[in-house]
Length: 119
Image 1 (spheres, rainbow, N blue to C red):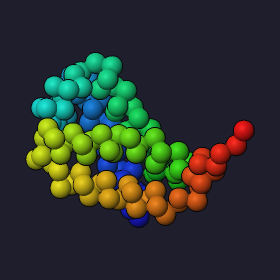
Image 2: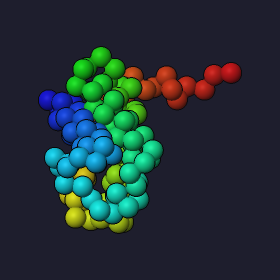
Image 3: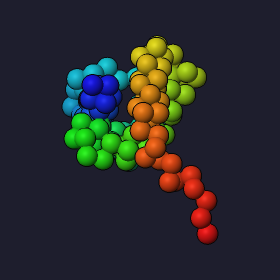
Image 4: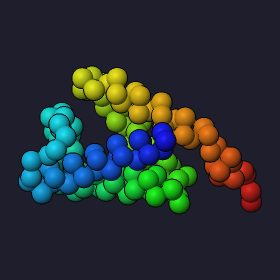
């Protein structure tokens, strides 16, 4: 159930970013500080594309480790951004970060081969 919630959050955030990129009215509130940092060009599209694809992977349920691994750097970046630049949404972002860490912990055995040293 938590996987679906995290997936829906990222799908909604990704789609919302595309609304901003296309010049449409976003359906979720946007952080002015985030738009100042990302702009409305390729960086916004790249971040929102990763959010959208990663969220869809979590909702689909076939490539959950890939979706979580792709979204984790974004989750950490979003948490750091809201910690240092825009603390208004810090509490929900910390909840998202905790949920993401929990999901990674639950499937930690899937990542174990990445940390095996081989020549």
